[in-house]
Length: 428
Image 1 (spheres, one colour):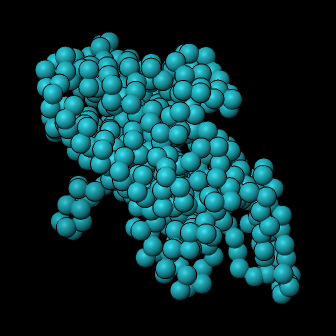
Image 2 (image 1 turned 90 degrees about the vertical axis):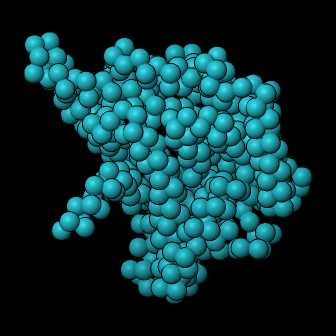
């Protein structure tokens, strides 16, 4: 009993957040076009291994190339589970569960490290509210298992937050440099204000910071060129091409534009829910959090200059905003018996209930957002019911490939999928 109590004390919060993320995986296992490159890459690494000529990206390269480093790392960790599924003759969809759950474990493990620093710096009660707010939100736990470049970078950003809170500022900058060069060039918009703040506060020296970041940058450039040039069969630094396409040519706007304030009027309110007003209150109540909020808020402001906007682009900002909200929630809870504060406490509880309701509704909408995956699953069931032993060819058009179907959805005989392209149709 004591052992169970100790285990729950150490890992209870992780089990809570992990269970919610796993629920989203099993209820909505399919993926969309934004995830297509990494999903197909994981499939090919796990099933084609060294037979690079069979890899999907050579036939359907997409608008811009992406790195294989994240897909390779996740696939290596998921390979024992995929091997077991193959030996048990389970459908490939179980391998999709495996890679997504492994990715979720990686991201939530990095979030755990950051959460431990929250407890050390702000106390266990703030940590509790941080977990509550995260659990009540939909997007972070839903996205943490989705193989997007933004999510792979998110894990490194969480590690940077961990070292930032420890006071290991050079290590924090190095993790952000890694995320920038390998996974998401736009993390540069977070590195810049953070580095400037650390310089102005004399937390780092300019000379040592340049030297440290330069060494890390050269290592990362060499790593991504080495790995990706082999798999793409040409000399390549993927994220440099992404930067050129989106920033220099400014072609990302071809995929839609939003107003400058969209992140503040739509994306952040939807993703933070109750934490949105609480985060603003936290900045006012505790001066310590301003040191951490200012660079992250600057990141969102700088990103707002780009016309093409999506929530996933700023998902790395959510943990810091949640921390500020948790500080405000803790202060309200501690003062709940005082005259004015008791009204804030009631309002906060109401916001928590509203957040839960919004999360349930958003999940229900997301569950229905993968029509092609659900249709193919229904078709497979029909085939088994009729016991058709002949080959049945199914044409997968572009819309289907963009809305739920990946190579992980392929079933064994009698089904044969004729694909028009598991395409990577978006720039970011």
